[in-house]
Image 1 (tube, one colour):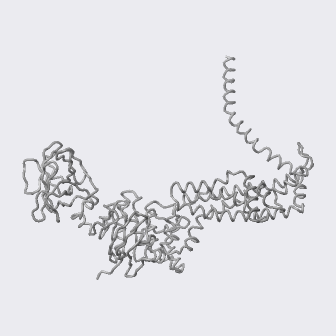
Image 2 (cartoon, rainbow over the protein chains, first blue to last red):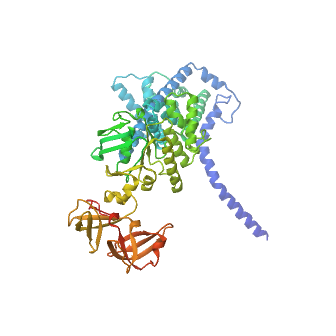
Length: 272
Length: 366
């Protein structure tokens, strides 16, 4: 009697372990992915300037010191300029491109689409250097504009992908219907096309902004003497790690999470 | 006096090396319901798109109510299309969809509301104005599309297979309703379809199209009873086709000899002895009698019944007449006496009910 009871419980134990093991594995992978990020955020609030666990106290002083850094304001402004400019360029080009290839049929369309997505696979280092060489070749001096163009190149494939996905389910006969009912091409664009693609456009734009916000390599090779938040962080790191870097990184992190979530929401919303 | 609705003169359309339309001439009266009927790829949709302005004719001209619109862009033409799958604007509700053309014409909100309400009543969708297109059934979508196209009172309404996505029952119902609406408004409808029943039910006249040409134009009854070609007879309604050669000509009675040696008779013109021809005879015009009895018809062949299929209002016989050639014959209840599978029978028809044409080259149906 006793042994059989023990047998059952042993078997049950094994079974419950077996049921648990996938959950444990998922937990391990997730903590591997997120632990560094969480630690960074935690350290941005610690009152000790040494980055060591356990965290000693809670403070906002690193955020204050990061924001009061005279370079910070400049870097923030440049980061935003870059993000907005590159997103606008990428969205305008990418949306037109996605519309353009809908009129191409069959294999040639696939080739055009694949070719436009390829830059996403080119290492940022190669792209950064190529752009720097190209710009110096045409005699354009390094600066924000060059970096913005570089960012647009980086985000363009993602914009094209997003817009192409939207247009796959786009009923182009609605555009003919509008023209047929008396709308000029411009009125058709204003009344039908734009409202139907606007959420996808905003989603793609947010994605482009997110890609630009934390971009370092291409920026570094092309921006010259200007400063962005990633470039600032890199500069600060060279003088040793200080929790205000964590504070900056956390700010970037939180904005990215918000932007990417929003972008996802918009581009995956089914438009009826 | 019949007023001219649409006048198409010498319209051709080439897509690269492919010619979609060959020299089309078509006059449609105001208030007429005309169907462009033909198999897919026959050019009917291209013709519709040329009338609406979405395609440019390579040559020829299009006039609407006497005004040449050949070079007018679609938004300046007084034609509206009902698209195959509605093509409703997904971000607008039913009322906004219907009112869109009126909004473009800068009518006041109150005027638009009145007209939209009229249209909703016309297509029997009262009270659904605030629904979104995704909340409508397939039939309702097409009703809204119709209302939207009719709202601005176009001189010509173009319908591009608008019922093809609906199930049979609904389609039949909508056919009659479309007809009623067209009569009620006295509007000119041009209806593109590949469904011959649809064309027969609704049209005042049908233009039968094949390979970029109008092969016959006439009322449904004319086209059904007197098809102008093998294509028209085969495409509209069901028919039996026999291939043979002309053996004898008496006025317009043509005797043709089949490969099996049997002789058939029908009407035809411009034929010579020995010429390869096709004879067409509709299943319901064939009389079937037991082999012994001899009725007074002239054309007669014998065979035996392979199958008897009950179709409700009539019964279809499959009759083999030799060498595997099967003839379809539709009979009413009272004609069926003594006819069962295996019976030997005689087939006959009135001469004027069988049509003989020169064999169409390139086509070779059994």
